[in-house]
Structure formats: structure tokens, C-alpha cells
Image (tube, rainbow, N blue to C red):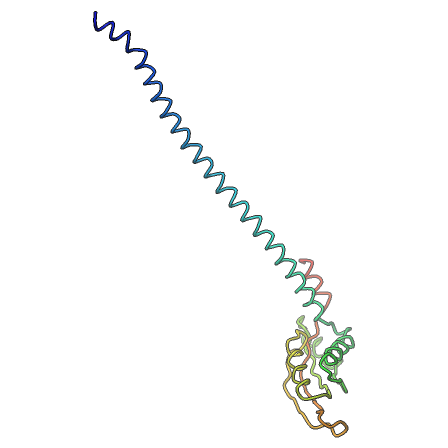
Length: 192
């Protein structure tokens, strides 16, 4: 009988201890699951935030590329725009206090050669240009001109003192200009 009394008096506290142990184990397991869910959500959030931040950078880079493409297109001239190209070169030279005094090229001769060759590439036309200005300014101007996409090359430069203006030089150089077919460029821009 003593066993029954002990059992009757201890069964409830033992049951409570067992329930408490199960509850603590379940609570610890649930806490670990919540910690895992939180870590996964945090990783997902960080990945999405990084993607959002990189998309903003990509948008900025795309806007920069669009601006560069616009500038690139501004430096392309078709044969119909040859006079505009010469004006552009004259304006650029003016930015360096250099004057364009003469500009010669023979477009019809090279158009005929292009038609005979049947090529669809840009037309390269030789030219000869004369400029007057101070030596250093002419050098800076030529340096910037060489960076333009419409200039194929400069292959001969002659400098001599300007007898009319002391300190200035006359510069005559020969080179080649590139002209594009604007219709083909627009087709390429449209993805055709």
C-alpha cells in the first residue's frame, strides 16, 4: 500500500515534470526553427536589397551609356553632312584659338570608288587642311581632333612660321575622314 500512496502522490508531479520537459524541448525546437526562418528571410531580404541597389547602379550606367552613344552619334557624319563636319572641325579649332584657313577633299572620286568596290563599309576620304594659331594651341587641337571617331588618321603634318603674325604658325596636315551611311546606322540602332 505504501507503493500506491507514493504513486498517487507522485504521479501528478511526475506528469508535470514530463510535460514541462516536453514543453521546453518543443519550445527550443520551435525557437531554432524561428531562428532558421529569420536567417532565411534576412538572407532573402539582403539579396533583394543588393539586387535593387545594383539595378539602380545599372540604371545609372545605362543612362551614362545612352549619353555616350548620343555623343558617339553626334561624331558620325554621312557624306551629305560633309559641310557640317567641316564646320564642326572649325568650331573645335576655335575652342583652341586656332583658325581653319583651308580645307580640301575630293568626295565624288571616293564615292565612285565605293560604288565600284560594292562595299557597305564607311567611306574614307583623304583631306588636306590648313590652320593658323600658336604652336601649343595647334598641338592641343590636333590631339583632340585625333580622338574623334570621324577622323581615320593624320599622316602628314607641316608647320611653318606665320609671316603675317609673329609667334603664330601655319599648320598643314593631311589625313583621312570617315563618313558613314546614316540609313544603315539607324537600321542597326533599331535592331534590324
